[in-house]
Length: 145
Image (cartoon, rainbow, N blue to C red):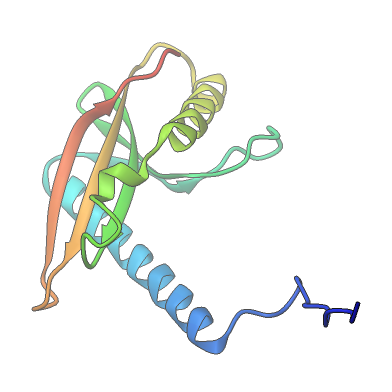
């Protein structure tokens, strides 16, 4: 029986895939900039961007931590140019929610627990005309802290 040629599982991604990934990261960062401006224009005070607890052994980051009146909001920003892969908020799945819960617990440990917390999602849609549409879903999901 002839041997099959071995395929490398460690091959580098194609240049096209790398370019698409870079475009998505750039679009995501631009979306976060838009989300910060949107929140600020509605009276929110931005406490942190891309917050991750140092030395806590917790992976991940929270896109935005903001104070909206007397509520601390953990905001996940999802940017899309089409709905080919579903609605932006659908990307905040159970795994991401658990991660945000762990991050919120770490934030409380560092900043005190006398705060009311809320978990929000901001959706940024890039239309054909390049003008973004923003939707702020306040209290998008609940977790037990």
